[in-house]
Image 1: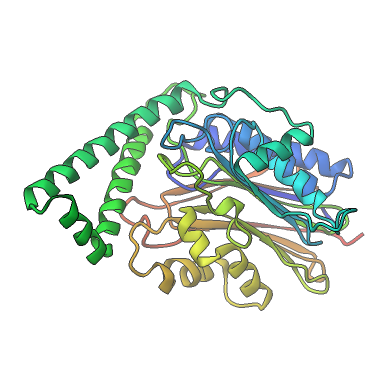
Image 2: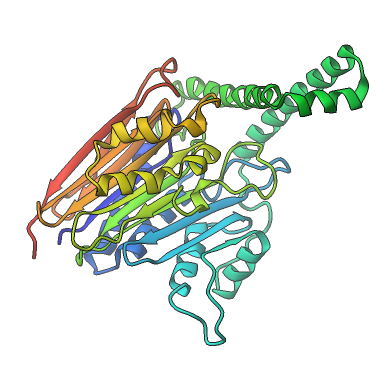
Amino acid sequence: MSQFVAVHSGCGAPSSKPHAAACRQACLLAMEALRRGVSAIDAVAIAIQSLEDAPCTNAGRGSTLNELGQVECDAAIMDNKGLYGAVGALQQIANPIQVALALAKESRGVSSVGRVPPLLLVGEGAKRFAQQQGIAILEPDSLVTERSRARHERDLAIVRESEATHTHRTAAEGGGLSSARKRAKGDGHEHQQSTHELEEKVQKASSQDVSEDKDAEEGEEAEYLLDTVGAVCVDAQGNIACGASSGGIAMKRCGRVGQAAVFGAGCYCNEDAAGPRIACCTTGTGEYLIRTQLAAKLVTALQARENSVVSLVEEHFLASPLLARLPNRIGGALVVVCDPKAQTIDCTIAHTARGLVAAAMGASQQAPLILEARQSSEAEGLSVCSASCGVRFRVQ
């Protein structure tokens, strides 16, 4: 079987150069490992660790900050043999994907005292497990960069301004706090709309960073932080694995866990040894991807030979009844289908955001192929754009 690697740096509106460079580096490191005989799941961890270390991604160091100005990350990893491990709301760890990998490997079977090993650990429990595995626990602020701190202060000002406006409006309407609570209880949709309006303000402020970065010097990283990064790898034995890692959404509540750490939402592989081996990792608004369980839905539908990746993202995400009343439906996926019978590996990215940068590389290739799928700001959240590539291989 031919080895294969595909990675992406998160959907949003990325500046091409730094994100293409980050994806290229992750691809090369993972392919080098696969050529040495490393397993697919270990190669995925290598690729994602490289993306976590890249300053332009929203994973690991430099991630978006929570409401208290802290880095809290989510990550998960899975392979076609049933290994799965995930961590959520994890602080003080440079590479959360390594903790998820250690948990996945420990999840085999039952412990000596009969306890079923966990698949997901969060917060302090996840950090304690990491320490037990010999993974370094860093100082609380060591993952916070000057750029992420500045962005947090700007977003915090937006939130405070919005809260002040809301308080003033409530007082003007009369009835005090009691009446405000009754109004909120009686009209949850109005509250939901105001919450989304606030999120859009923060998002627009981030989008402004994109236009400012267009005039940046060559090689300077993009100011705009994206969403979950991900990777899919196929090893020489035909095993397939996938993973995801994320710093989450800006100004998130402490302890919030996004789709990157949720089974079936952040990453998913099938276990069908007879047919094509399929893996998927998602990126976008975590709560929406959790609602739709997009990763598992895409893999299951493709295994049943249902339509294309693009049409399935439209059906199971953009047009999902679970998101019918929700605005700004940002999400997408990287999908790899390895078919030993046809001797092909196909890679597709499809999303509803402004853009997504990815890279893919087969064992016979000297350099990764960069994939980009972009659309206008007017189409964001309303349509699906995509890019794809494929390789042929000889069955050994």
